[in-house]
Length: 348
Image (cartoon, rainbow, N blue to C red):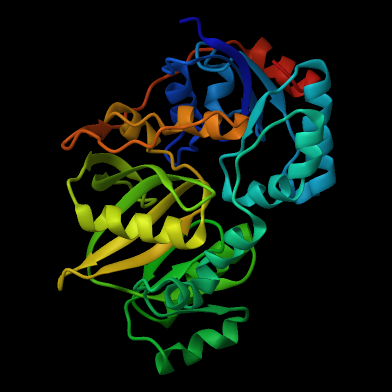
């Protein structure tokens, strides 16, 4: 059977010590038995490593930051599409999803397919809305509240015990043992990601994660749970292992079924010492460790493309337990002329 030729554009090419999901998503697509994909990289920075990994990305275009405005970003995508047609667009950062969800109809009209959460789904799983989310869907969540001013830090003792978690609305999470540490993390996170800052109860236990894909009708297309084996100083998993845990999969099904979740997601869970599962975060896109799921038998990037193109998808029901991923660093040698070409022409 010959493979279907398609063109897929992706963001998240920053394969550094805080890796974006772009490269592992591409690796899954490259291993597809059904698609022969031309990969178009969409880069925000000139030094995102995947730009120069020519066996990974076929062509790269520079795009403006979402903070420059939704219209500017979407227009750039449409301009690229006009000279280099895109069949499927897969955004891989939380901060850009709002722009692409809002522009879904415009992109579809131009012939660019996406498979993203709805704005309502995106908002209700926000860290700031987690208590309401837990109540609505009947899942345990840590107590949390958003704060907008530094003055509120001194009042936290009324509602929280130390240590507690300090989180950004998109990224970053730090454990704080006192008021001074909360102030330090508040300043650092708000400078990068803005307000609100979310203060969250610290649940003692083991953190586990699930990568999953929902079809938008309440069905789980695939789900693979894992436990991090090695964590960097940025809190990123540098090694992990797939788990045999029916309770994690049941919780994932419950969330996807209740929300009718559309697209990829990562559920971050703490299994307390009393064996209770607390949802501490729901990330609204495929995580950077998704290649572990591919290696364990569930090619979720391929399934996501099928959903975007309206091709029927048979849900995955199994995966290999005890599969591990271990990240490693590599020196990529390129030429300054390539860097200059991207910087001056906006494409490579």
